[in-house]
Image 1 (cartoon, rainbow, N blue to C red):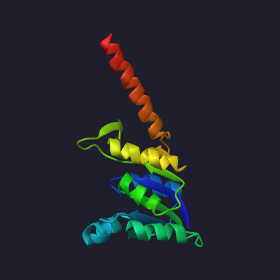
Image 2: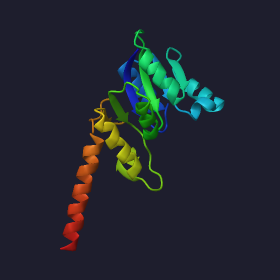
Image 3: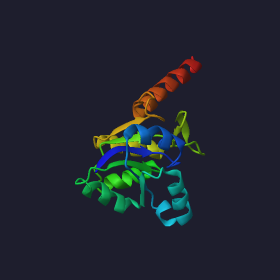
Image 4: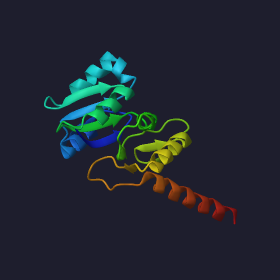
Length: 173
């Protein structure tokens, strides 16, 4: 099994994934990693309706997903992995999932979060989780679609904080 993309996107399966990413990475299977969705038959069925007939869909909890990723090296299947949040990625890494790179897609704004990119809003806990993931040598990039420019989200956040701090300092003078 070849993992062609691991994407964190709170919408999981939607148009950007199916029309943009799936066609670009030429995946044979989508693996949705979600402890919540695996137990929700209605949501699982709805996801199945959104996936093209020629693409296999697997919905699994975190533990089972790690097993699938780590044990599936003997197949030629190309897998697109979808995670609903950074917490799920952290859990997978703690369970020793073989992850080289993460794509941050849609993490939408809610109370307590700061919007950094058009579709990426994070709170301080998520930023700390991303820093811990990066310390493990895992690449973290953000872009909505494959042809968009790659953004190093942690570098972007740091630059924004520095820039914001300079602006605040100028206001004081």
